[in-house]
Length: 96
Length: 96
Image (cartoon, rainbow over all chains, first blue to last red; front, side):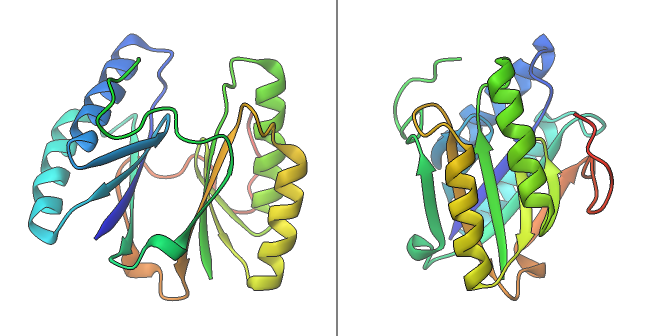
């Protein structure tokens, strides 16, 4: 299924920027970073359990917010875009 | 239907911050700001057409990125959260 993960952290703080980098690295193993703090990942139910456990270890639960939106398997018609295209495509090096 | 709108703009720039404020104001007419640049709005098909037309006028199409994720009408089980809860709930004043 396609899962959209949005991550909110104050990246003006060096620790926050470090956490965002770690979240991005983790999510890009299974998907694409489509905006600075938005990731679209393809996972099955078992992979999702692992991903959430790993994310839970990275984030600061007091300061950060992570939201997961399940778009299912027929997700193509559920996504629309406006403005510029993603900064980073899957597989490209992260420029943070 | 529930629509998740994610907005990516460099808000270190005053103009960008202004655009984000305008996007937030617009989206909060029909929903909630759940993260700094993530909005969950409840719209029908006609309202979505209007919303997109208004967003299109606000954003800088060269610099900003907006993504729309349609979660449909049975969205409750498609959303999960981790970490802190939304900064701003529907109806509250925006603190920008």
